[in-house]
Length: 383
Figure 1 (cartoon, one colour):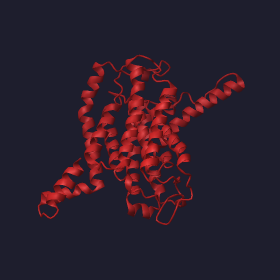
Figure 2 (cartoon, rainbow, N blue to C red):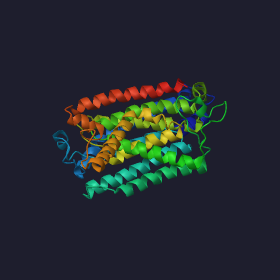
Figure 3 (tube, rainbow, N blue to C red):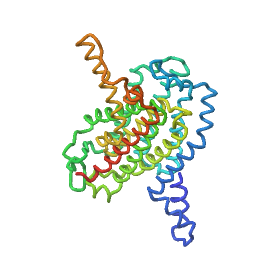
Figure 4 (cartoon, one colour):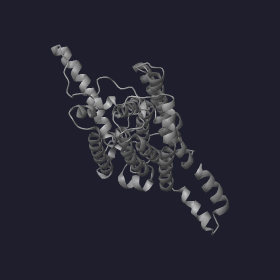
């Protein structure tokens, strides 16, 4: 919105040939780095300003967190803390993105749309569990249907409305990227890519959801992962950087940088209220939407494989649950008694039951997440 009004209308119409400092200053609105920076700041400020009123509204509506009985005493103390605070993240991301991005980008609307659709699935799950007092929320089939539908919509838009390259861009191998030197060797076609998109979006969405189990954990992981993804999106959309790094150039992904910046600001602002002791939880409406946003941006920028490193903690948390469940079922079938690998899954609960305090676990996870993010950025030139 600012781009069209201040740059396209005011600057180009009235100030292009002017020597006025005011008009010359408006020229900065054409630059993606400037708009991304201010989208980040805008999302942060919106979250900080509206965080308090949203929390009080959730308290009045008695939308409080339910805690499973098997969790620790430390977790039991959080019972009744307002949840569904993810609506604050979604609202601030949408507003700041619309204010600062160019709105003629299909990729931008795909990212906003997919994030919203995943958020709706999470909202329905939270609403049924907390407001309707049905402890299980949506059934697994209902949740899976909503996520599959979102992934199919993303694929359908790419197939029908864009010139999306259906190749697998694998880190470390520049022959798998579409560059100015030729076609990628990993071209798999749109129909096979549908399953890859489904796997990426559902995996990202559900692993973030599993990570949301401690004060400040999912929000801080989101801040780090989205900061790395902002940098990756920028270099992917810039011809000079993509050519230099031998990665698939996606100029249509430029405005996704603004979206990613908004997500960085919103997650940082939410962390203000979600840091221990948390005043609000994001709920499934926040965690499913954030995971969907990560997965969608990774697909649109051809960074799906790199998402394993960008969101390394999310992947580890998801794998811990899969290993725990798989090993328990296997040992129950073979020995008659189910055994566990971890004291409890996801992994952060294992460390908690092992005696570590929640803030220490979160801070250590933050350190590991930063290492993963730095490694993901380092792979750009390791080709």
